[in-house]
Image 1: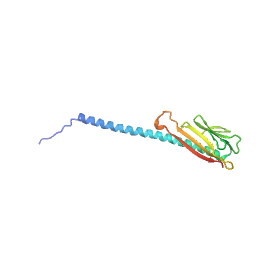
Image 2: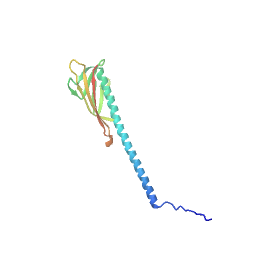
Image 3: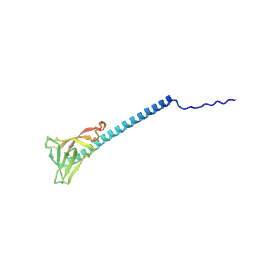
Image 4: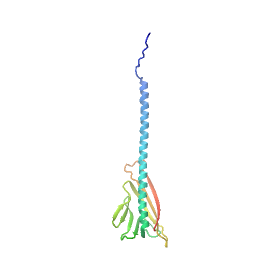
Length: 168
């Protein structure tokens, strides 16, 4: 009985080229998906930073306005880039204003930043909506942009927030 033996001679050049092309295509696809995912993560981080900072700043302003007894600035029916309030039990006013691209709160004990370097405040305005004979009411407009030192388009994000607050 004759035995048949088959000899495996290896892969042909065409088979190797096809395998390399398929691996290259898979690698390119995986890299593209990873890059898009990283860009989306950075954009979401920028959006989150802007929202977080705006919520904190507006909360601090709202609390100060609600605890205020006298409105120093802006005057009735006026708009200003500074909010100055007199709070009960304090000799010095509480002042909210822009310092460069940072929103600050100045009290008798010193100044504190309401926003960090993660965002830039591009607009801060306060409109006194009060009508004589009523409690003071304010409209605060705050525009924040994500800090983007690298200048990448996917991290460009800006949002304007509005809040209306009334003295108690």
